[in-house]
Image 1: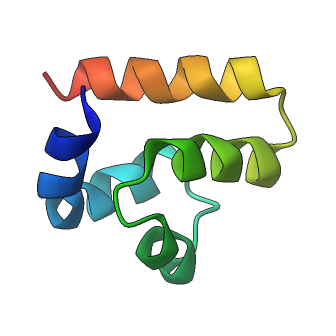
Image 2: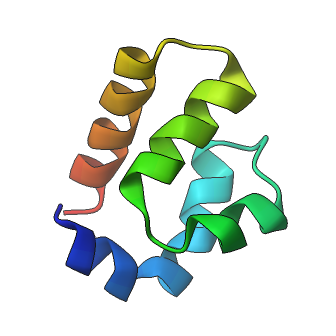
Length: 66
């Protein structure tokens, strides 16, 4: 999913993101504002995982949206 699509659907994604990654706060989601790299970084930070693992999780999430 490209960045334009992510940003366009951002408000619709808040609930899905919180279900996928329950440790996100509303503030986290507001700051992400559709930025994929920020999302990957927050997944990495909140769950203490490597960047490549976080990136794979985000990619899998993006696939589930198609």
